[in-house]
Image (cartoon, rainbow, N blue to C red; front, side, top):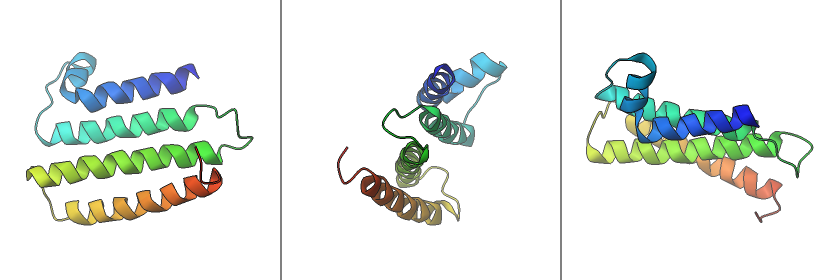
Length: 120
């Protein structure tokens, strides 16, 4: 649980302040597209922490993994969408990536709800 909490906490810090985190960790400046990649990395670390957090209600890790992947998909979708709508760093694959993440998140959300019996 300590490792999971540490990864999730690090992910939150990197999501909120990637430039500060990189400066403190590596002593280097982070700007431009590095901030976008840093925030996506923070989202992934948060999801990793969630995936490793034990679920006392389940004997298998499937529910925890689905929850973590859903969280990653949802946050990544929202962040990529916001980045694109601001008009910053819009490459050829940004909008296809947003669409893929929307579908991926929808499917994971359905799987998570069906595993929990429709309730949380």
